[in-house]
Length: 232
Ligand SMILES: [Fe+2]
Image (cartoon, rainbow, N blue to C red; front, side, top):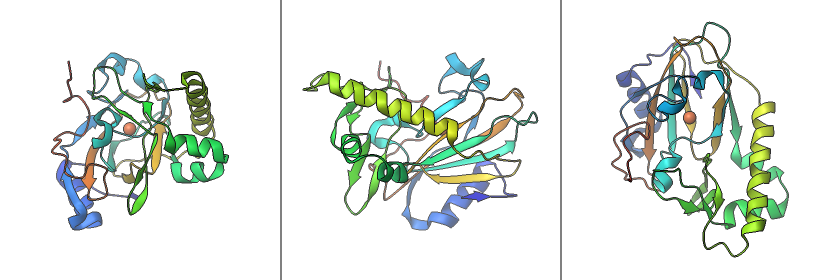
C-alpha cells in the first residue's frame, strides 16, 4: 500500500502503522534515515551505493528469523533526477509460477543465509508458518550449509534462484515514491529493490514493525536497520 500526502516523520509513520494494524503490532523500531546503500547498515557501500541498483531483498535478513514482517518507507524527498525508482515482487506469486521441484527446494532446503558478522541464519528461503502464509526471506548471502548432504546441487539451485531474482528485478514494474508517500509492505511476502540515482539529497525514512504474524513476534529489537547487531 502507498499512502500519499502523509507525514514521513517517526510519529506520523508509527501512527499510520497503528491505524492499519492495530493491536496486531508487537513492536515498532525507531525510524532510521535511508540514504544511498541503506543508511547505517552498509557504510562501506554508502559512498557510491546510490549509483548501483539495490537488488531484490527483504529487510532485516541479518536478524535471521527475528526479521520484521512489516516495512514502512516514507519518502521525505524523492530524487530530483528521476532515478531511484522502486520495484517489488510478490514472492508467493513467484513460488506458484516456478516448477514443482524448484518450488519445493525453496521451502524444504536449509540454506546458510548468514550475513558476515551478523546473526547466524540457517533455514529455508521460504519458512512455513502455522496458520499463515510462507515467510519469505531474501538475503544477499546464500550458500549451502556446512552439513548439506549435496552441496553441489544446492549450489546450483542457489545460482538458479539468484539468476531468477536478477531477471525479476530487471523486468519488474517500476514506481516512484514521491514526497509525502509512505509505502507499507508485507516484508514476509514481498521482495523490494530500487534503481540507481544521482541526487544524493534523496531522503527516505524506514520503520520496521513486527506483528503477531512475524516468525518471532516478540522481538525487542529497537532499530529499523541492522547496525545495532554485533556478533563479533
Ligand atoms: Fe530494503
